[in-house]
Structure formats: C-alpha cells, structure tokens
Amino acid sequence: MDPVVTVGLDGSPESLAAARWAADEADRRRLTLRLLHAWPMLAPEPTRIPSEIDQNYWAKKLVHKARSELQAAHPGLPIVGELVADDAQEALLRAASESEMTVLGSRGLELVESYFLGDISTPVVARAERPVVLVRAGARSDGPPTPRPPGGVVVALKLRGPCDDLLAFAFETAAARGVPLRAVHGESLPVHAYTPWGVDHEVTEEIKQEARKRLDLALHPWRDKFPHLDVADSIALESPARALARAAEGAGLLVVGRRKHRPALAPRLGSVAQAAIHHARCPVAVVPHD
Image (tube, rainbow, N blue to C red; front, side, top):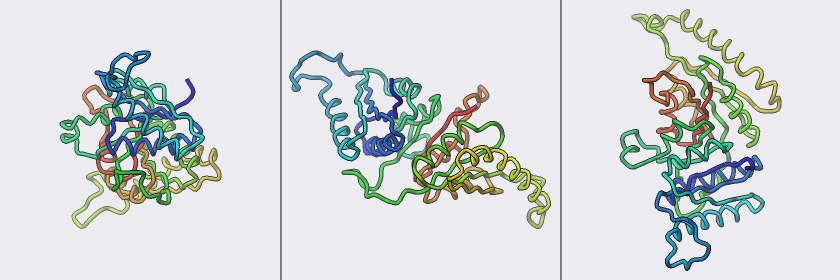
C-alpha cells in the first residue's frame, strides 16, 4: 500500500473537521488520503443492488460526500474511501498501524464525559503504534471553516529519555507547513526549592541550567538537519501541563509524546498528553516513542 494519511469518518462535525485537516496534511506531504468508516453492521458488498435496499447506502453516502468536498478543495490529492464491517476502535487501530498518521475528530471532553458518550479517540491514541492527530470541530459545522493564517508547531519535551520519534514528527511537520517550531519543556520545582519567603533562586537557577543542557542536547541534531527551520525553545519552571497550555495558545498544532512502554499499572497516557487532548484548542498530535 502507498503511504497514507487515514481519517476516521462517522458523519459528526468533529470527524468532518478531521477530514479537512487530514486532506490539507496529506496534500502537503504528497500522500494518499484514506477515508475510513467502520461499523459492525455493514453488509458484505454485493455486486449489484438497488440503493433503496442497500444496507450500506448511508455509509457510502457519508464517504462519498466527504470525498467530493475534499477532492474539490484538493484536485490533485489521491483520495480513497473504505468501508469496514468491524468495531470502529479495532478498525482504526489496524489502519493506524499501516498509516503515516491517523486523524480523528475529538470532542475535547473530560474523561468521564468522553467515556459515556462513546468517544473512541482516547483509546485509539493510547494504543496506536504510530502518530494520531485529534482535531476539534470549528465554530461552524455547516461547511469548511474560514481560512486563517497557520500557527506554528509546538512540541512538548520531558527530556527524561530518548525523544527522537517525537522530534522527527515535529520538525518534519513544521518544515512541511513552512511555519516556526517551538520546543517547550516544563519542570515542576522540587520541595527543597521552596523557602518561607518564596523560592531559592540558587536552586531554581541550577535546575534551569541543567534543563537547558538537556534541551540543547536533544535539539542540536535536529537543528542541524533542518537548518532553515525557525526553531525556538523555552524552559518553564512550572508543571509541564501548565507550561504546555501557555505555549499552545495560538499554535497551529501541538505535538506531545506517549511512551510505548509504561509500567503495568500506569495509565497509557501521561498527564501532559491527557491535558493536551482534553484542553488544547488546536489540533493535537500524540506520537508514541520509546
């Protein structure tokens, strides 16, 4: 199969926003766009059958309508539609394993609300072996949103281990879009940094200098690989989730990581990824890495 960007379609405003975002990204990267609609009750495809008795009529119409809109906006983009008679979560996980990225609509809800409303984006993000991008619906749901100047790409770095997969995705995406990249590292202060009158500036300066060394070391090879890319970085001595929220204001894409191998009893998504998924206003890319 040719390299593809897969988007999950269910007819919701969120999935249509995701399809438009995915089409833009596939066009930039010169990849094929795959529109995937999965439902366990889809019937085996007959050779010829009148539309009025075709069980798959509405599923076909959903994909056809989205494909027509996207093809009009991107005339040269290869677009394929796929109907899968299976649970949506399992179908998307299979598709994600063979896609350059998978794009899903996101309601941006809290975990409990998302669970009861049947949102499948979080489980797919937590288990996919390749990048998944979550896109919220815009203010308008009756057509493509009004074009806005693209914001930059923001990537969150923890600096507690290798993060090359995360940085590769962030740098390549910013380069493909022709926008600046900003790397952000947030680090909560330890208890011993606090004093009765505030914080110990010697301790905070030491923490900041150590973080600066690790951040420069992580970014150096990627800055060399993308010499023409505008790259900025920042270190904030506050919770990583809060630092990320500040940096993401006005961003066109927020990139966060997810460790592939986490302790057995730990949640599949860390606190930073959870905060990004449920509160960031811009699209969020979750990149699994070692």
